[in-house]
Amino acid sequence: MQSVQTVEDFALLIRNRRRALGLSQAQLAEKVGASRQWLIDIEKGKPRAELGMVLQVLAELDVQLQVKTARARRRETIDKDQGEAQIQALAQAFQFLD
Image 1 (cartoon, rainbow, N blue to C red):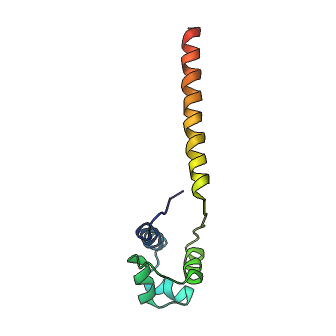
Image 2: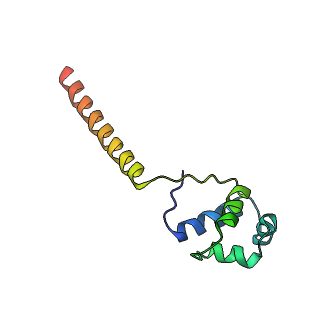
Image 3: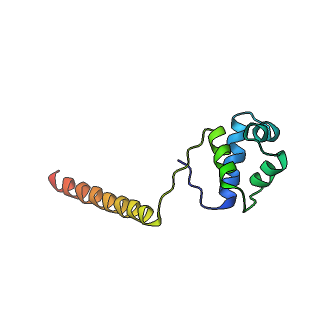
């Protein structure tokens, strides 16, 4: 899963996915009822865009949007760190069995 944290990340995701699907800017814009210039602005990282239109673009590109809170991201980091610590402890414990 690709993490998008900035407008530039989002712009790159849209552009790369559109290209991967073989769509021109004009084709994608037409599919979502937007102008080609609107899509160009999005792909350039324009910081403001109508959310409904952006969601239509994501749907057309078969991209799923998932939102996580900062707390959830911190929890994942803590879980990962704890998991790695447990693995290291087990590895050390098994070394004593050799």
